[in-house]
Image 1 (tube, rainbow, N blue to C red):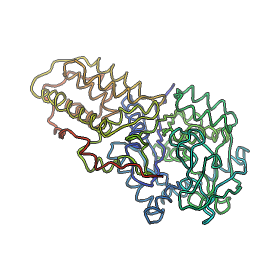
Image 2: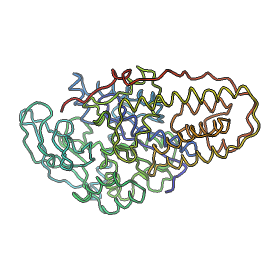
Image 3: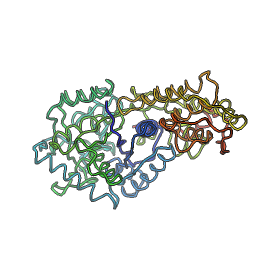
Image 4: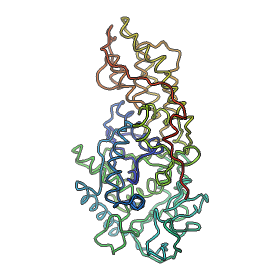
Length: 523
């Protein structure tokens, strides 16, 4: 499908209830960064804008666990998450705190305006629903406060979405619902909240099929459309969140991913000076949503429902990139359950570099569903990259300074890079096939001459940006690896400028990383 010259990618906002783990790093944010780098290498103008989900109830749950206020909790983790992304070489053009002074009023006003618009068009309707409450405290048991079993797959879950199968459900569908805090009995009360329903559910499914959404990620959307016609929540119970001026006490406007993305569009317009909002129909900007499969309803359904209800003022994402959940040692990585390896501990406490961790995570085929990684596979991929750099890449770079080089043909490198970039569009990307293409290039029997090194830089740029930039600089080439620039290279000079070699640590063992592993806490 067509990609405009200008592209805005909005990876789903992480919840600041803790630091990022390898599941975060290997999923949505790595995909946003890799796709952005591949598009830039082809000449597109790309921006990646997101922020943290400060109004999520999981922040309150973390504050309760950590013994401090929700404000202190989210601000601390908001800053820490930005550091985690930077350490993994995830490039962001803006990092938004929607509750901070810069954005708070405009962010709230956007949600108020859209809710008012949907009421005016008749797309929003007040409906009754049954909500569980803790009998002893009177707390509404929604989000992190409720636990039970998924009505679809039977696995343990809570809130409104199963992190295993991606199923969306309303509170009363949760099987054997119970409070996550204390042993209070659950009582059900009837509440009235605002909802919107798709005008044309079939059109939503057809649009995602046409965009190449894989069946494994389309299935939860089809079930949601079949079971409740594309009904999405606009308001809910809570005292931490976006309190609408027209809502009674105890109600908040749903802090959904799509309206967060629309606000990111406002930030993008301010950054670029564009006259048209990127989510306006016909804006000329390709908008891309990126999220995990446990957020199928917020990412795949809500944008279309709100766009239909806005009657021409908003358009849904042009493309959506969904990834499966990363499991570590047999269980899904989870902040709340403290299961996984935290990026900060791995990248700041060990010799593992951002490129090495990216390389290992790229081999998990999350573009096709859930995948599992272990300490053994993690260290295997890191050691393979270290061995190749020491025995193949470093000698090839050293030879650049020892012998003159005649003219050369960059055609094989250009073709290999173009084929790889075709795997990294916002429409059905496949990062594992892309890293396989890189592996095939670096392991090919081609002579490791300058043309081969150009290929290393071009194929490495989206995946391993530090390595790619280092090789490009050692070749004496300006800027970053770009296809158009590589196609017009003159014969390389006999000598390349000296650049410092990147240190190559020795091999890792699973035991050397064991201290950084967190194993799942019981429910």
